[in-house]
Structure formats: structure tokens, C-alpha cells
Amino acid sequence: MVAVIGWDIGGAHLKAARIEAGGSGAGRVVAARQLPAPLWLGLDRLEAAIAEMRRDLGPARRHGVTMTGELADIFPERGEGVRRLAALMTAALAPAPVAFYAGREGFVADVAGREGAIASANWHASAALAASAHPAALFADCGSTTTDLIPISGGEIVACGTGDAERLAAGELVYTGLTRSFVMALADRVPFAGIWTPLACEHFATSADLYRILGELDEADDQMPAADGREKTPAASIARLARMLGRDAGEASPAAWRDLAGFLAEAQLRRIHDAALLVLSRCPLPADAPVIAAGVGAALMRRLAARLGRRCQPLFTDRAAATHAPAAAIGVLLSRTEDRS
Image (cartoon, rainbow, N blue to C red; front, side):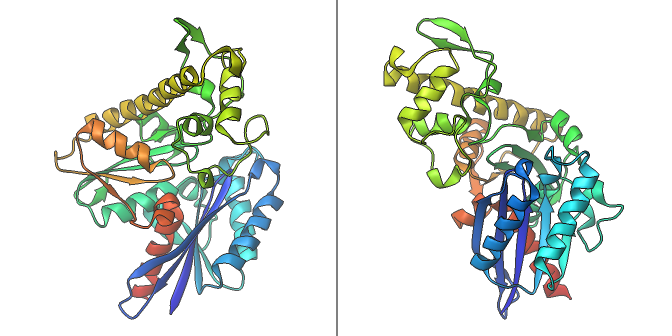
């Protein structure tokens, strides 16, 4: 049994997926995991997460790596982040060979001179896998922090941007996600107690609090501490949300706080919907082209598909693989290179 492992190094989490190929050569995701690894607190957090993940997933013949962690402010610039993360992964996974995903260039062994292609290329891996199965689609991956909206036409990725700056401008990268987005970034003002109320420009609450209040959050998907470091319960989330309005939780009913959480969740989805409309205005797709959903926020992507009047399909039927789609996609794509070798 040939096994490879795909890795996705984020700024806050480490994701990995084990892919096994039998006699048919078809790569199959047999396990996918995520561990917290906040890079801004030091690379030792990542090293510990890698060691735990290796114990959990077992040995592999080869490893594939993609990343967005080079954006972490522990690095003075992104190129250095790519080089340092690549060196760390190569050492941690030795003696098995490690290949780094460089977008359109595919897998490379040496990151030197390819830092720009490797930086934040995890979206391309997932979209490439989607494109291999769908001639036309909108790939939509809502993670903990960001959402990718990638058009596919003719079985090819037809994204306008490659780097983060271009993708942000094109609507193909939306900096909002299911758990880690700051509530203050979702709206300028909110309706509450009969008036429009500005939100405090402070990190009092996150999007995880909204979906917890609404009863829509799987707690396994929220691995980072709450904004105030306190417990993760609906009551505690309401208290954090109330701070965004300069209030205490007891100043309104639980129903009023749920309505506020619903308004902010709707504001987040509207932002994603607007970006999707921008992408589709530039790259019209056939009416029967589906939305291919992935990420911890796949449920939000299903709502997006409904708004767009399109059917929705998962990138992976296995929830763990779909939740950690870039790592699983890297593993599957790498296993295909094994098949051809």
C-alpha cells in the first residue's frame, strides 16, 4: 500500500491528510486532521503540531506541502516565510522526500526562486482537483479565516489573480471565515433595540461566537481560544457579542442576541455573495455549472449556491477531507504524480 501525506500550513492551524493508493492507483483519503499551530507565537508551535500529526497519521513514502503561513507576522516578508517553513518541513519529515506545491508549476523540490508561486497557493491545489472532475464550476472553500471563490471553465482554473493582492481585488479571495473573523469587520453598524448601533472597533468577539449563538457551530471546528480567553458556550459568546455594542448580556433577551448574531452572519454571507457575483460577472458560467463546496464553512457555501440558483456538490464526500480540503487535495494530486512515475 503506497501512502503519501498532504500538508497545509496555515497561520493558525496545521492540516494534514493521509492518502493511500491500492492496485488501481486511485488516491483515497483515509484520514484528515487539523491541529492548532499559531505561528505568531513561534515556530515551536508548528514543530509540536507536526510531531503530533506524524504520530497520528503514521509514516508515508512522500509528503506534499502547501502553505499560507508565510503571511504570519513572525516573518519580515513572505519569501523568507516560505523558505523557513520549507526548511522546517524538510527537516521534520526526513528522511522521506518533501515536495512543495507551486500552483501552475505543480510540485517542486527546491523552493529557491519559486517563493512567489509557493506562497498561499493552497487554493490552487483544491481548485485544480475540482477542475479535474468538473468542466465548469465555481469552487467555493470557506475556511476558518478566508473564503476562496475560483471559477472553472473548460476543465481549467480561470482565476484572474494568482497572488493574494490580485485575488483580493478580484473577489477570488475574501478575508472572512467561519470561526476566526473579527465581528467588527463584518458590518459598520447593526440594528439593535430599535436603533442603528455602531460596532466597537475591538477584538471582543469572532465569527465563531455568532454561529455558536445560532446553534450552527461544530465545536471541533473552533480550535483557537475565544477572544477573551473564556469558555466557549452560547452564554459566553453572547457576553462577548454584547461587548461589541458596549453592553452587557443581561441588557437584552437571548432572542435579541440571536437576532443580532443572525444579522451579522447574514452580513458575512452577503459579503461572500457580492464577491461571487463579481467573479461570475467576469467569468460567466453555464446555468448548470455547480458550486463545489469545501471547508469548515461548507454549509455557508451551500447557502451561497442557493442564492446563486446553482446546485451544490462537495469536493470530497468525506467530511474530514472536505473540511481540510487543501491538505487532502495536495495529497491526492501528489499521489497522482506517484501513479505516473
